[in-house]
Length: 69
Image (cartoon, rainbow, N blue to C red; front, side, top):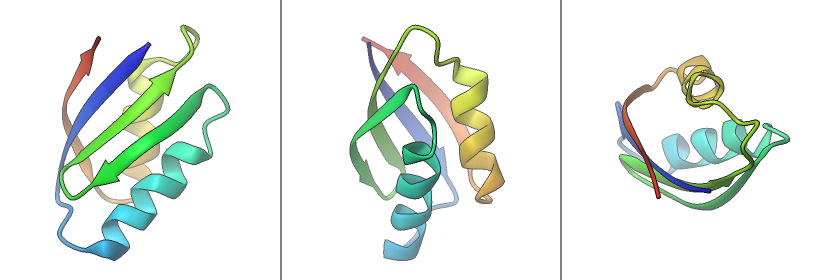
């Protein structure tokens, strides 16, 4: 399923790279796009929003919302 993740605290290319790497490290998530303030991923049903939030938080950013399509 496709998830659009709104993220606060991102301000530069380094932030984008950090979030992309964090999400790429999750086996059940395939990264489609990461931009300042937002990421779009394809997630297997086993991928929880909490798992995604934790990976992003570990890089120092805050997920403000996750929309599943």
